[in-house]
Image (tube, rainbow, N blue to C red; front, side, top):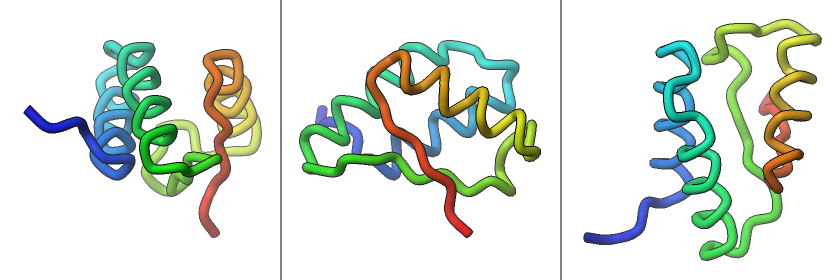
Length: 76
C-alpha cells in the first residue's frame, strides 16, 4: 500500500475534525510524515472547511498542530 500524500492526509484531518476530532493525533502524524516525504514545510488548510472558522479556532488548531511538530497556515 502506498503512503498517503499531503492532500490525502489533509482530507483525513478535515474528516476527523467533522467527526469531533476522532483519531486526530494519528492523522496529524500521517500528515507530518507526508510533509517530510514531499519536502513541504507547512500544511495549508482551507478555513471554510473547519468546524471553528474563527480566529480563536484557527489559533487553537495551529497551537495543537505545532505541539505535534506540524506548522499550519490557512489559505485565503
